[in-house]
Length: 292
Image (cartoon, rainbow, N blue to C red; front, side, top):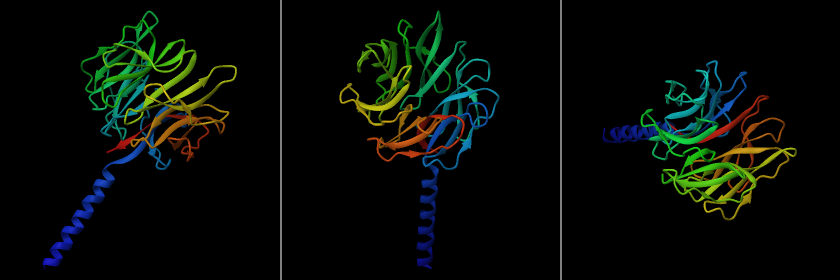
Protein backbone atom coordinates (compact mmCIF):
# COMPACT_ATOMS: atom_id res chain seq x y z
CA UNK A 1 0.00 0.00 0.00
CA UNK A 2 2.84 2.39 0.93
CA UNK A 3 4.48 1.90 -2.48
CA UNK A 4 1.19 2.46 -4.26
CA UNK A 5 0.80 5.76 -2.43
CA UNK A 6 4.36 6.80 -3.35
CA UNK A 7 3.79 5.90 -6.99
CA UNK A 8 0.51 7.81 -6.99
CA UNK A 9 2.21 10.90 -5.55
CA UNK A 10 5.06 10.65 -8.06
CA UNK A 11 2.61 10.30 -10.94
CA UNK A 12 0.72 13.34 -9.69
CA UNK A 13 3.90 15.42 -9.42
CA UNK A 14 5.03 14.39 -12.90
CA UNK A 15 1.62 15.23 -14.29
CA UNK A 16 1.71 18.64 -12.60
CA UNK A 17 5.20 19.23 -13.98
CA UNK A 18 3.89 18.44 -17.45
CA UNK A 19 1.01 20.84 -17.01
CA UNK A 20 3.42 23.52 -15.80
CA UNK A 21 5.70 22.94 -18.77
CA UNK A 22 2.77 23.26 -21.15
CA UNK A 23 1.42 26.33 -19.38
CA UNK A 24 4.29 28.56 -20.57
CA UNK A 25 5.76 28.19 -24.04
CA UNK A 26 7.71 30.51 -26.32
CA UNK A 27 5.67 31.89 -29.22
CA UNK A 28 6.05 34.49 -31.95
CA UNK A 29 3.17 36.78 -32.82
CA UNK A 30 3.27 38.56 -36.16
CA UNK A 31 1.18 40.26 -38.81
CA UNK A 32 0.34 38.70 -42.14
CA UNK A 33 -1.72 39.56 -45.21
CA UNK A 34 -2.27 35.90 -46.09
CA UNK A 35 -6.07 36.19 -45.79
CA UNK A 36 -6.21 39.30 -47.99
CA UNK A 37 -5.88 41.95 -45.28
CA UNK A 38 -3.38 42.52 -42.48
CA UNK A 39 -4.21 40.42 -39.40
CA UNK A 40 -2.42 39.18 -36.28
CA UNK A 41 -1.24 35.57 -36.06
CA UNK A 42 0.66 33.46 -33.52
CA UNK A 43 2.97 30.50 -34.10
CA UNK A 44 5.58 28.32 -32.44
CA UNK A 45 9.18 29.48 -32.69
CA UNK A 46 9.87 26.82 -35.35
CA UNK A 47 7.05 28.17 -37.54
CA UNK A 48 4.54 25.43 -36.72
CA UNK A 49 0.97 25.71 -35.41
CA UNK A 50 0.10 29.04 -37.05
CA UNK A 51 -3.15 30.48 -35.72
CA UNK A 52 -5.08 33.57 -36.80
CA UNK A 53 -6.10 35.80 -33.89
CA UNK A 54 -7.86 38.80 -35.50
CA UNK A 55 -10.57 38.35 -38.12
CA UNK A 56 -12.40 41.67 -38.37
CA UNK A 57 -12.67 43.84 -41.48
CA UNK A 58 -10.01 46.35 -40.42
CA UNK A 59 -6.24 46.20 -40.76
CA UNK A 60 -4.41 44.90 -37.71
CA UNK A 61 -0.70 45.58 -37.23
CA UNK A 62 2.23 46.01 -34.81
CA UNK A 63 1.60 43.12 -32.38
CA UNK A 64 3.48 43.16 -29.06
CA UNK A 65 3.38 40.35 -26.49
CA UNK A 66 3.02 41.39 -22.86
CA UNK A 67 5.84 40.47 -20.45
CA UNK A 68 3.58 38.10 -18.49
CA UNK A 69 2.56 36.26 -21.68
CA UNK A 70 -1.18 36.79 -21.32
CA UNK A 71 -1.95 39.76 -23.59
CA UNK A 72 -1.12 41.17 -27.02
CA UNK A 73 -1.18 44.88 -27.76
CA UNK A 74 -1.71 45.79 -31.41
CA UNK A 75 -2.84 48.52 -33.76
CA UNK A 76 -6.14 48.34 -35.62
CA UNK A 77 -8.10 50.72 -37.83
CA UNK A 78 -11.38 48.84 -37.33
CA UNK A 79 -12.99 52.06 -36.10
CA UNK A 80 -11.58 54.22 -38.89
CA UNK A 81 -8.17 55.27 -37.55
CA UNK A 82 -5.18 53.38 -36.16
CA UNK A 83 -5.58 52.95 -32.40
CA UNK A 84 -4.21 50.61 -29.73
CA UNK A 85 -6.14 47.47 -28.86
CA UNK A 86 -5.56 44.59 -26.47
CA UNK A 87 -6.52 40.93 -26.69
CA UNK A 88 -5.71 37.69 -24.95
CA UNK A 89 -3.08 35.50 -26.60
CA UNK A 90 -5.81 33.20 -27.94
CA UNK A 91 -7.47 36.15 -29.70
CA UNK A 92 -10.33 36.53 -27.23
CA UNK A 93 -11.49 39.69 -25.44
CA UNK A 94 -10.41 42.15 -28.13
CA UNK A 95 -11.01 45.71 -26.98
CA UNK A 96 -9.74 49.19 -27.61
CA UNK A 97 -7.30 50.42 -24.97
CA UNK A 98 -7.12 54.15 -25.62
CA UNK A 99 -9.75 56.82 -26.01
CA UNK A 100 -7.90 59.41 -28.09
CA UNK A 101 -8.88 60.89 -31.44
CA UNK A 102 -5.60 60.94 -33.34
CA UNK A 103 -3.63 58.12 -34.95
CA UNK A 104 -1.50 55.89 -32.70
CA UNK A 105 1.28 53.50 -33.65
CA UNK A 106 3.92 51.06 -32.38
CA UNK A 107 2.79 49.89 -28.91
CA UNK A 108 5.49 48.50 -26.58
CA UNK A 109 5.07 47.15 -23.04
CA UNK A 110 6.95 48.24 -19.95
CA UNK A 111 8.94 45.39 -18.33
CA UNK A 112 6.42 45.12 -15.47
CA UNK A 113 3.48 45.00 -17.90
CA UNK A 114 1.75 47.92 -16.22
CA UNK A 115 2.08 50.49 -19.02
CA UNK A 116 2.29 50.67 -22.79
CA UNK A 117 4.22 53.37 -24.64
CA UNK A 118 3.52 54.34 -28.24
CA UNK A 119 3.75 57.06 -30.86
CA UNK A 120 0.77 59.38 -31.30
CA UNK A 121 -0.14 62.19 -33.67
CA UNK A 122 -0.83 65.34 -31.67
CA UNK A 123 -1.84 67.75 -34.44
CA UNK A 124 -0.06 70.33 -36.60
CA UNK A 125 1.91 67.53 -38.27
CA UNK A 126 3.55 66.68 -34.94
CA UNK A 127 3.91 63.37 -33.16
CA UNK A 128 4.78 62.54 -29.56
CA UNK A 129 5.75 59.55 -27.48
CA UNK A 130 2.95 58.77 -25.07
CA UNK A 131 2.07 56.08 -22.54
CA UNK A 132 -1.04 54.65 -20.93
CA UNK A 133 -1.71 52.13 -18.20
CA UNK A 134 -2.57 48.61 -19.34
CA UNK A 135 -6.11 49.18 -18.06
CA UNK A 136 -6.51 52.23 -20.31
CA UNK A 137 -6.14 54.77 -17.49
CA UNK A 138 -3.59 57.53 -16.86
CA UNK A 139 -2.77 58.63 -20.42
CA UNK A 140 0.47 60.65 -20.48
CA UNK A 141 2.25 62.61 -23.23
CA UNK A 142 5.99 62.15 -22.70
CA UNK A 143 7.56 64.28 -25.46
CA UNK A 144 6.33 67.66 -26.67
CA UNK A 145 6.35 67.06 -30.43
CA UNK A 146 9.17 69.48 -31.23
CA UNK A 147 11.23 66.48 -32.40
CA UNK A 148 9.79 63.51 -34.27
CA UNK A 149 10.40 60.44 -32.10
CA UNK A 150 9.09 57.05 -33.20
CA UNK A 151 9.26 53.36 -32.24
CA UNK A 152 9.60 53.83 -28.46
CA UNK A 153 10.67 50.85 -26.32
CA UNK A 154 11.11 50.93 -22.53
CA UNK A 155 14.39 49.55 -21.17
CA UNK A 156 14.44 46.29 -19.16
CA UNK A 157 15.03 48.26 -15.95
CA UNK A 158 12.14 50.63 -16.72
CA UNK A 159 14.33 53.74 -16.48
CA UNK A 160 14.90 54.66 -20.14
CA UNK A 161 13.15 54.86 -23.49
CA UNK A 162 14.91 53.71 -26.65
CA UNK A 163 13.50 55.19 -29.86
CA UNK A 164 14.19 56.64 -33.29
CA UNK A 165 14.62 60.35 -33.94
CA UNK A 166 13.75 61.50 -37.44
CA UNK A 167 16.07 64.45 -38.01
CA UNK A 168 19.41 63.82 -39.70
CA UNK A 169 18.37 60.54 -41.23
CA UNK A 170 16.89 58.11 -38.73
CA UNK A 171 18.90 58.17 -35.51
CA UNK A 172 18.88 56.01 -32.38
CA UNK A 173 18.13 57.94 -29.20
CA UNK A 174 17.91 57.00 -25.53
CA UNK A 175 16.04 59.29 -23.13
CA UNK A 176 14.87 59.13 -19.54
CA UNK A 177 11.49 57.54 -18.93
CA UNK A 178 9.96 61.02 -18.51
CA UNK A 179 11.33 62.16 -21.91
CA UNK A 180 14.17 64.24 -20.51
CA UNK A 181 17.83 64.17 -21.56
CA UNK A 182 17.58 62.57 -25.03
CA UNK A 183 21.01 61.27 -26.09
CA UNK A 184 21.93 60.15 -29.59
CA UNK A 185 23.92 56.92 -29.41
CA UNK A 186 24.68 56.26 -33.09
CA UNK A 187 26.04 58.43 -35.88
CA UNK A 188 23.72 60.74 -37.79
CA UNK A 189 22.97 60.96 -41.52
CA UNK A 190 22.12 57.25 -41.68
CA UNK A 191 18.87 55.33 -41.34
CA UNK A 192 19.11 53.21 -38.19
CA UNK A 193 15.54 52.01 -37.75
CA UNK A 194 13.47 50.11 -35.18
CA UNK A 195 15.96 49.60 -32.35
CA UNK A 196 15.16 47.03 -29.66
CA UNK A 197 16.78 46.40 -26.26
CA UNK A 198 18.26 43.00 -25.53
CA UNK A 199 16.59 41.32 -22.52
CA UNK A 200 19.53 42.30 -20.28
CA UNK A 201 19.65 45.87 -21.62
CA UNK A 202 23.29 45.61 -22.66
CA UNK A 203 22.75 45.39 -26.44
CA UNK A 204 20.55 46.99 -29.08
CA UNK A 205 19.48 45.37 -32.33
CA UNK A 206 18.30 47.51 -35.25
CA UNK A 207 18.06 47.64 -39.05
CA UNK A 208 20.44 49.85 -41.02
CA UNK A 209 18.33 50.93 -43.98
CA UNK A 210 19.73 51.92 -47.37
CA UNK A 211 17.53 54.58 -49.03
CA UNK A 212 16.47 54.62 -52.72
CA UNK A 213 17.52 54.01 -55.39
CA UNK A 214 19.46 51.07 -53.89
CA UNK A 215 16.97 50.10 -51.22
CA UNK A 216 18.29 47.61 -48.69
CA UNK A 217 18.47 46.83 -45.02
CA UNK A 218 20.71 44.76 -42.77
CA UNK A 219 20.38 43.77 -39.12
CA UNK A 220 23.00 45.27 -36.79
CA UNK A 221 23.82 44.87 -33.11
CA UNK A 222 25.65 47.43 -30.97
CA UNK A 223 26.29 48.03 -27.30
CA UNK A 224 23.74 50.17 -25.50
CA UNK A 225 26.27 53.02 -25.33
CA UNK A 226 26.60 53.00 -29.14
CA UNK A 227 29.93 51.18 -29.35
CA UNK A 228 30.93 48.04 -31.25
CA UNK A 229 28.38 48.24 -34.08
CA UNK A 230 28.32 44.90 -35.95
CA UNK A 231 26.38 43.83 -39.05
CA UNK A 232 25.01 40.33 -38.54
CA UNK A 233 23.18 39.83 -41.85
CA UNK A 234 24.55 40.28 -45.34
CA UNK A 235 22.04 39.93 -48.15
CA UNK A 236 20.92 41.80 -51.27
CA UNK A 237 17.34 42.05 -49.97
CA UNK A 238 15.87 43.96 -47.04
CA UNK A 239 16.15 42.62 -43.48
CA UNK A 240 14.35 44.65 -40.81
CA UNK A 241 12.00 44.72 -37.78
CA UNK A 242 14.26 42.61 -35.52
CA UNK A 243 13.27 41.38 -32.07
CA UNK A 244 15.04 39.30 -29.42
CA UNK A 245 14.13 35.91 -28.03
CA UNK A 246 13.36 35.98 -24.28
CA UNK A 247 16.84 34.63 -23.42
CA UNK A 248 18.62 37.03 -25.79
CA UNK A 249 20.28 34.20 -27.73
CA UNK A 250 18.26 34.54 -30.93
CA UNK A 251 16.70 37.24 -33.11
CA UNK A 252 13.58 37.09 -35.25
CA UNK A 253 13.17 39.48 -38.18
CA UNK A 254 11.41 40.00 -41.49
CA UNK A 255 13.26 39.78 -44.78
CA UNK A 256 12.47 39.71 -48.49
CA UNK A 257 15.64 37.81 -49.41
CA UNK A 258 13.55 35.07 -51.04
CA UNK A 259 11.22 37.30 -53.03
CA UNK A 260 8.64 38.53 -50.53
CA UNK A 261 8.70 39.30 -46.82
CA UNK A 262 8.88 36.26 -44.55
CA UNK A 263 9.91 35.78 -40.93
CA UNK A 264 13.29 34.25 -40.13
CA UNK A 265 15.22 33.57 -36.95
CA UNK A 266 18.97 33.46 -36.36
CA UNK A 267 21.44 33.28 -33.52
CA UNK A 268 22.47 36.66 -32.13
CA UNK A 269 25.76 36.46 -34.07
CA UNK A 270 23.94 35.97 -37.39
CA UNK A 271 24.49 32.21 -37.63
CA UNK A 272 21.83 29.50 -37.58
CA UNK A 273 19.50 31.21 -40.06
CA UNK A 274 16.05 29.58 -40.25
CA UNK A 275 12.97 30.50 -42.25
CA UNK A 276 9.71 30.24 -40.28
CA UNK A 277 6.97 31.37 -42.67
CA UNK A 278 6.39 30.49 -46.30
CA UNK A 279 3.50 32.37 -47.83
CA UNK A 280 3.08 34.37 -51.02
CA UNK A 281 1.71 37.29 -48.99
CA UNK A 282 3.48 39.52 -46.47
CA UNK A 283 4.58 38.06 -43.12
CA UNK A 284 6.42 40.32 -40.70
CA UNK A 285 6.68 42.43 -37.54
CA UNK A 286 7.51 39.54 -35.17
CA UNK A 287 7.24 39.78 -31.38
CA UNK A 288 8.81 36.91 -29.43
CA UNK A 289 7.79 36.02 -25.91
CA UNK A 290 6.66 33.39 -23.44
CA UNK A 291 2.93 32.76 -23.66
CA UNK A 292 0.82 31.39 -20.82
